[in-house]
Image: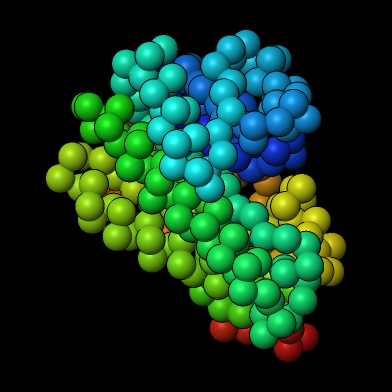
Length: 260
């Protein structure tokens, strides 16, 4: 599906990351991929544990909270490839203290940092990536149902995801004239490094498995295949969309089995 296509994946933390699952599937479909990592040796090692077995060499530092770092990252991608076809934005961050406390108790600085990295980074990276999408392209970001409804334990990150989804829609509008599509995946809970910060995450997994129409949790591969759809020409008429990959959990007014 992606033979001859080049794209950037941002947000791999380790092999359990959603972004790692997307990378694996796109690799199997023939894509050439480049990756970002936080500018420190430890994070580079984590990312390379994912990329090295796949044979990818373009693994570059990028701090999305700094415009100059984003600019430098994409300048190096341009130097290597000239143009790209897609971008996967799988980036979110909040301090443990600010995400585990009630939203009402979140600090001002923690809120600003979380919104900057989790939300504004989509604007910054899309702006830079779009300059390399000279033949059109596709951008996909990762969200979660906690941006639509209150999910206990998700707290301030739910506010960030809500902002991210609306940001995605406005960026889709801005880039539509360049034939660049921008969409979001709203994935069900998956056991990742980021998920470990969410309170009672294991209970959340069980609740989703019992409460969704499909009666199971989703996997990295489920999310990767849907991401590939949005990145590919098969979704050529789709932009500004939030595609739920959660076993149908989001359609339920009362979770399956709750009244049994």
